Image (cartoon, rainbow, N blue to C red; front, top):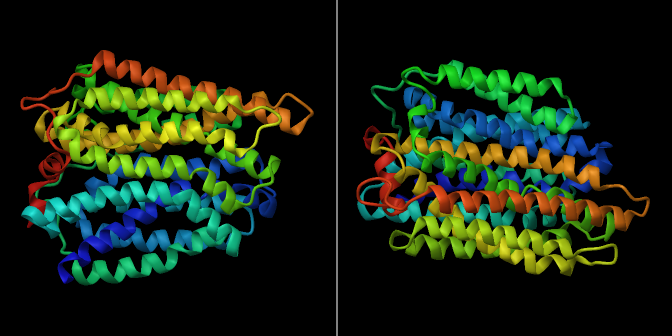
Length: 464
């Protein structure tokens, strides 16, 4: 039993950092009332965490290669605990948003090191089991977020969605310090500080411009991202631009960004309708999302077992089209609709997400040369978090533009219907692009199982 303590420590941190993406959703109406927060404020509470995580995860991995992966993971846990405490104690929304950004920084440090720590802790069959458990925990975190958030908010108040992180962090800290071996790269890559800075500024400016309707920041975002493309032409780049010479890899990155934008980014606006218009409690609102969360979790496990002998192109492309169908199915709501009208569509979204999540990372790693597979996996994680932040911002603009009626029920129904149509268009675009530009077996040997791919891209020095 002792041999699995490192896995418990690593999975505890992974679960916590991923559940914090969605646990906030059903608590937002209570936050708005308690902190007198606007819709834009609520968008930042959701988006900033994902934005900072996306911006820093690749750089955090490079720092961990130098300083030691266990040390960086431990530091991330400590900072995450402090940030969670500040979130829970925040007297105003400004401090809450800032603390969410600090949470995102800590989450990047943790997320960037988890797979390498598993590799250094296990070998052979045990390593395969550990990777399987870690993947299941990823799915469970997404499934548990809304339900756990609703339960805590209903029982103890919204601040406890952050306070609950403290005991989990304490357990993970002790187990990591006692059971997880240290590992580092004896020849680490140089830190790409210019790439990190330009990517962070560009992403933040773009999200800020969308949420706060600031047109001049679009110019800042474009300039910063142009600088990022320029500096990434150098050796030791954070993201090797040569990977974009074939259509498959950029298509998969776009899909990674559009997946959360289409499947989950509208939940904030659904939650406002469920609680502010229909009068559901936080736990009742959390239960509404159970079909999508549970279906995603179960199907991800099933797909993980069969995808090594199944077309990744078919799984990803059809999965995105399932998401589109599920989101469009939710446009049936009108001024007289209840929460049950959402359930068939949410179930289809869960089916689609379950088909896409595992194959997406594996396909991205198979679409690039072997030595760049780790970079590809990190880029997929980066684009997923960035896509969520941008999705919340873009759909927020659509939602606000749809609030064009004095009747509350009709206004929310119209706004949500418009939001669903745009979200579905994201999924259709991604699904069609995958069928057009992605081919199975991009690298010799075809698309190999996720566990073997993960073992291959984690630095061999992590095993010592």
